[in-house]
Image 1 (cartoon, rainbow, N blue to C red):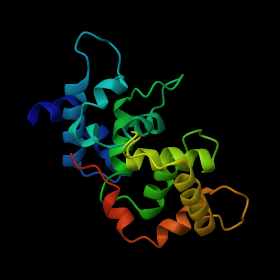
Image 2: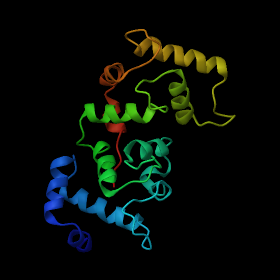
Image 3: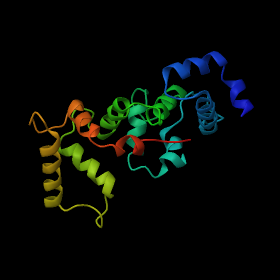
Image 4: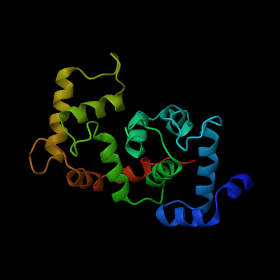
Length: 186
């Protein structure tokens, strides 16, 4: 662990502590893990999404590609992450992150078309991610239509046919298990 501490200046660790929900130990561990993912032959400070997806914490998450997309600051967005992107991801998924932060990022992850609302298309992709998008697990069209209708009836307060962030946060606030299930632990 001493190697990771020597590579990350103390003032940077302090700054990262102020800007995230992570402890000093978590930041140092994150730096070590990020450094292990970096391509030694590359001068890039970004880790490609495909390498991030090899992490055991993300490997089996059905939203792993969306998670990388949401936290990536690359242009065009290829899902690659800088160390700061990686810290933002870990911070949002940490036990210390607030319900507001967790629900904000969950909403962005579930907003597959990045238009600021969850519409029927986003909800269908969300359900398919959760159930598995195979012939054996996929809902038939009628079941999917009924489920989306039920979700919108429960969540779409302004009845515009979509769920916006505040409506999503309202639903999440009534779900006590959400915070404990929305985490990644290194």
